[in-house]
Image (cartoon, rainbow, N blue to C red; front, side, top):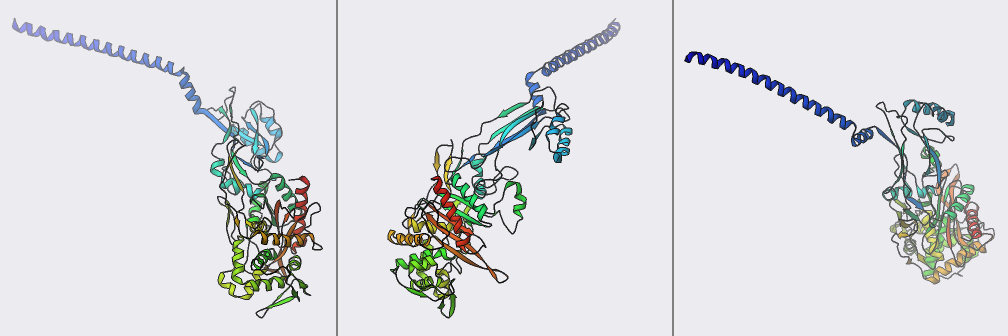
Length: 551
């Protein structure tokens, strides 16, 4: 009996084990079925989810930046100097429907290139074409940062291909001007091949440009006059117009100038060198420096009416230095000598003054001093003779009429002339008034107070001498027809020759009106000869234009 129960027990256990296995299989299969059902339902839900659909669309969205404007560059009257023109720029979303219209509007020389863009199927920008009116082509009026021609190009500067400033104010204030760009962009949907998905409306985002910008001392009206006259009358050179009391630069131009459509040619033009700003570079200044020599003599008490007889030459320590008038000027005082630009007179005057005193007066007028205008933009320091050279009478003689080791920029000469007509104040040239957030109110830049370098009495005497040079001297081409003026011509030797002919710079630096000057104007006519023939007429025409408009 015990043995039989044992056998039944084993059989029962086997049956029960089989039954348990079957139940586990059923439960496992049911569990998997439920899991797959849940995953299927979840997947269906996810494919219909707005959030996921949007995420999927984002992955295929293509955004085309139509324009990205910078901060403004204003003149002193809040008139823009950049972004002064606009162009029509098309955002083309290629399709069979618009291909013909786009190609028809494209100049023949560019048609093959644009055809390749259409065939690629990816949205692109197009400008410089005729009007396009077609589905999938959006037109935008966008500002052109640097116009052709651009007003004050050497001051405003230009941008590189990435939209950053590389010269002028664009470079100096690049961080400020690019801090808050106004962006215009268009977004559309692309398929897996990068082609536009037809039937979907593109999304356009267009931000209004900010009024924030940099405010300059430049007056657009005066700048236009300066450039128009300079382009006609100067082949190479520079013009600077300054307020003699504040140092504010109202116009500054360098010739020849570059334009954005000939930039690559301008960079390699070694003869004209249009990329350099001649208004800020040093040149031999010649007889404009006689203002400094006269100031040193007057400060030492040497009288205006002391007479010297010019025979056409002067012996300086055994070295013969000739007057530009070979026959000489005869008996002249300081007034006559300044009008006639008599070199021997000023040489003997400087020898009386002494080399140290003359050099000190030149430094007082700011010669040899670098003139910062904004970050990275400055007037070159030029050069003065070393103090040790001033024991040499020949070096003193050369300096007396602006030759030898003296080099100065048109900006420095303008500053000198301002001190001679504003009561003896040395002003610091100023190009930037400040910045603005709203295009109406300026946050001013720090200014440097003017220094009294001459007594008002001596400055008045210099002013009188310079008025005689324009208003009394016969044959003076700097005399305007509608106002009074004072100033000084120069013909500066360069030490460079073509054959037996020496290159000479023509200069005129002066002010108007004569008794109550409103502007100082300096004209450099590079390598062109006599200042009265080349530079003085430029001054006269600028003074006439500004006076006629009442600026």
